[in-house]
View 1: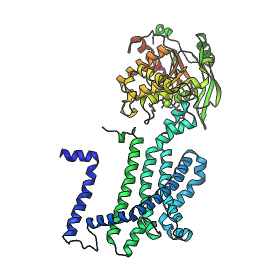
View 2 (view 1 turned 30 degrees about the vertical axis):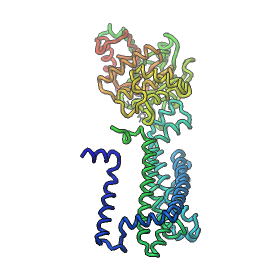
View 3 (view 1 turned 60 degrees about the vertical axis):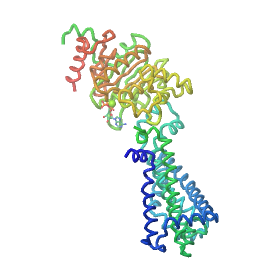
View 4 (view 1 turned 90 degrees about the vertical axis):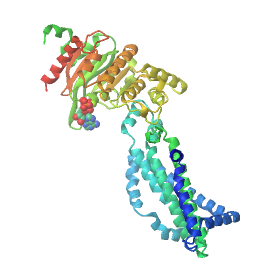
Length: 259
Length: 267
Ligand SMILES: Nc1ncnc2c1ncn2[C@@H]1O[C@H](COP(=O)(O)OP(=O)(O)OP(=O)(O)O)[C@@H](O)[C@H]1O
Ligand SMILES: [Mg+2]
């Protein structure tokens, strides 16, 4: 009982269920309940993991995918952030661009894949473009929303106390928008992996998605499952990092204060 | 109303000329409104306000909801411009820059510690460790020195308002404009805050302009009470009661009665 509470506090409890599922899965596979050509046993996946690690293939593909994800995120995220700030702070900028952006937003970015392949072939640009586009909107929308929802009374207070525009931005507006920006960040990270998986599965010559597709052709189901698991882990890792960053910078927020 | 008591308190429906002469006979002027009018679109909110306020005076402004009290304060603090008339300041007041504003809500930055919030009041006046020292000293004055490094969200309503008061006063303003700063507090905390405000005012001798709904609060704190009605000054009354004043004393109750009578016999 107290152990469970302690584990829950440490966040370790979240790992109990996956561990139990893996144990059950292994047992079922060994007992022959799950045919190996449908789902390989975790031990077989671990073996594939070891094999691909030794050959260096796994690390290389993870590296390629991560680089794509991060570059796409950096491009789309920074454009979204800057436009969100600009449109939140200036009615002129908002008037000029917001309608257009809202229109583009209604197109699912994955629907552009055929067009993107025509434009870029299966080069890096195609993946970067799709990830950047997918990441752009959650960051843009939430940055804009965050700035628009900053308490105008606080802004007025800042003016009365003589804060100049720079101080007003860094001490009042940006901190006020930060909770919303973090919502956008975490959402964008999810979109980032999703887009990359789809893009790499359809058109790539390296990366995790490509590795999974190759494995499918050679009926290496253990490698396919391994790729999926690694995606899950990378996604979780990115989310945890974002959460950590959030906790560090939103320490003032009642939601992050320990009772 | 007994006429004898009324002679103690100057009661008049101020014409601009009268208001000017009365204000200027005693000491240096802090600021003066001259025939100030303020319109929002077609709506006339202030319609020729003339008010001369001596430096160091504690002025209370009362009036019914929507009569333009906040508008008056916003003009004083430079948050808005008058549509007509003019506003002049005494030499030491240096225009709006030495006017501080205390809002009905504390308006603390939730992401800045208590002491950092107070340091906002020193923007353009002091920085770095000097600002921190002065902010801490001011927090001590309002009895919150031990909470300096906490987040505002953990403070009670009254404590937040005390931090806001510290922030308003740390820059040693010449004029402090207070827009119903105690309106949201419970009765006990309110009296405590009134006493704190009076103590600091006696100590620092700034000019205070307090907007309040509470006539009792106005007469307990102010040297002079102004009632606004129909966009003009409907009543301008001195409160010549020695300090420290005792809440609910007969003298204060009498002046309060005069004001209430006035508020409800007109309009
Ligand atoms: N920015 C504005 N635009 C249009 N009308 C305004 C504006 N500010 C105030 N008013 C109007 O001016 C009138 C006076 O407002 P003000 O806030 O000064 O009243 P008040 O005396 O402070 O009332 P309360 O006691 O309820 O705070 C109101 O009718 C209000 O609707
Ligand atoms: Mg008001």
